[in-house]
Length: 101
Image 1 (cartoon, rainbow, N blue to C red):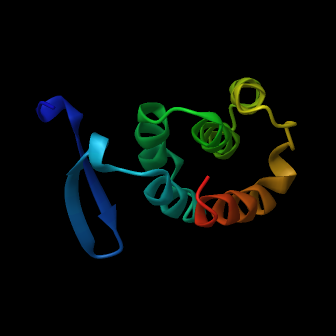
Image 2: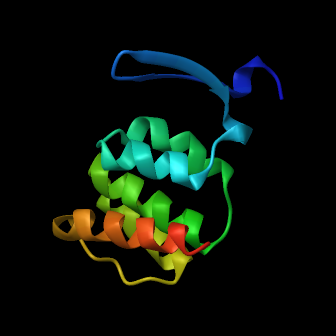
């Protein structure tokens, strides 16, 4: 990976740089739980599979891009919940990731 794959993050008073390829859906979830969809987006874009597509849909809900969120929920094989259920979706995603999804 080249320098273009590096991503800089600030979390509270911590600042760090990591390679996007080293990021995981659990890290994306942590960003999403803090409302930081912009930091989660490159992580979910780099992952594949239905769980990544689900996380990608949540990114676009938080962004306010609902048509794109619907698309990613479809790719995940999940019903689109709408923006009012985003906290519940994050909790379910957290459970799925803890179960090894």
